[in-house]
Image 1 (cartoon, rainbow, N blue to C red):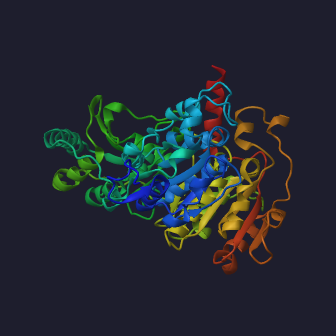
Image 2 (tube, rainbow, N blue to C red):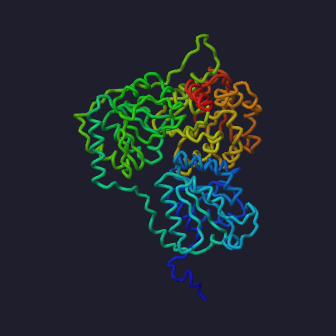
Length: 572
C-alpha cells in the first residue's frame, strides 16, 4: 500500500539528497567536518550529489577551513555531530558570523522520537534538553532551522541557504537521524533558489543618491575608503566601476586588503589611523569627504581606534543602510545606490585630486645586518614573491599587521581574521582556501604566513592538506612564541613562550610521502633573496614549508602601536 504521506509528491527525494543537491547548486563542492554517529547516514549521500567529503582532524579546524573555503568560493558547508562536535566548531562559526562569511553548519542530531521521550543519550547534558546547543548557535547564525516536519523541510532548507548567501553570515541546520531519509518534493530542485539581492524602492534610492551627489560634487578633495563588507556583500564590481568612473583616490582598510586592484593608478594604500604610512594618513585625513564602503571600525582594523576622521565628512555605505554625515537611511541597499551614482554622476563637476603612489620599498638597517626584520620582509614579499591571482592568508599577529606593507599584484585575494582574531585560524583557512581554488578549477597559488605560536594551535590541519594533495606554500615565522601578546603584556613572561618544534620534520610525521613536499629554513636576507628567485620554489607542484627565523623582539610598527593601545584599554 502506498504511503499516503508521499503519494502527492511528484518526484519524491530523500531529505539529505535534497539538501546536498541544493548545496551543489549554490556553489559548494566539498563539505568540511568530522563524522559522528548522528551524521553518519547523511554522509553516505555526499558522493551522490557530486560533492566531496573533506574529513578534518577536528571540528574547530573544519570550521576555520569552511571559513577560508567560503572566502574564495563564495559559500561553504560544514557537517558536525550533535553536542560535542558542533560545540567544538562554534569558535570558528562565531568568527564567520563576526566577519560576515557565509557558512552552512549542518548538525546531525538524535531522532525526534528520542527527543520527544527525553532519552538520556550520549552527547547530551543529561537533562532532557535537546535544544540547548541549537539555542547557543542561534546567536551566531542569521538563520537556524530544525528539520522535523517533512512537509516544510524543503522550504526550510531553501530559506536557510538563501539567507546565508544574502546576509553573508552562517546558518544552522539541525538534521535529526530519523529525518535523513524522509521524502520531500524533488521537483523543487528544477527551480534554483532565488539569490538575487533586494532592489531599493525607486523614490528612496533616488533621494539618497541625490543627497550623496550633492555632497560629493561640492567636495574639493574627496576619497574612497573600501573595507571588508564591500567584499563580503559582493559589491566589488560596483566599487571598481566607481573608481574607474570618478578617478578618485582609493584606500583600503586592513580588513579590506585585497579588495581593490593594488596596481590601479588610483590606489593609495592601507589606511588604519595612526598605523598608516604617514603620506596615507595625511592624505585621507585631509579629505573633505570620505566615501566609506563596507566599514568595520574595530580596534585592530583602525589601529586602536586611532582614526582622525569626522562623521561630518563621511558617507557610509553598508549592505542595507546608507549614512550621510549624521543622517541615516535604513533599508536602502548600497548596491543600487552605488550603481546609480556611477550612472548619473556629472564628472565635469567632480574634483579628483590624485593620492599617494604605493611601492614595495624595504627598510634598510644602518649596519647592513642580514637579520630578517619585519620592516624588510613584508615589502620584499610583494616585490619578489607574490604573483597575480595568488591567495594570501595571514595569521593574527605579526603577519596580519606586516601585510599592510605589501603591495599586491593584480587579482590577489587576501584572507585574514582581523576582527575575530582567533589564533590558529589561518592554518585551517589555508586548507579551505586551497581546496576552494582547486574546486573552482582555478590555477592559483595559496600562500600562508603564520607565526610559530599560532601554528601550534592548529598544526594538525597540515595532515588534511597532505591527504587531499593540496600544495600551499606555508611560511612559519619562527620568533619564539606569542609575539602580539608579548607586546601587549608580559614580554619576557613564560606564558608567552612555546616549545620549539622541528617544523621541517612535520610533513613526514603527518604522512607525506617523500617527493610530495619540500622544506626550507631561512635565517638571513640573502637566503630569502635566493629562495624568492628560485624558479623551482616558485613553480613547485608540491606542498612547501618555509621556516623563517625573525627576531623575538621585532614586530611591525602598526602592531606595536595597536598593542600599546590595547594594553592601555585593558588597564582602564
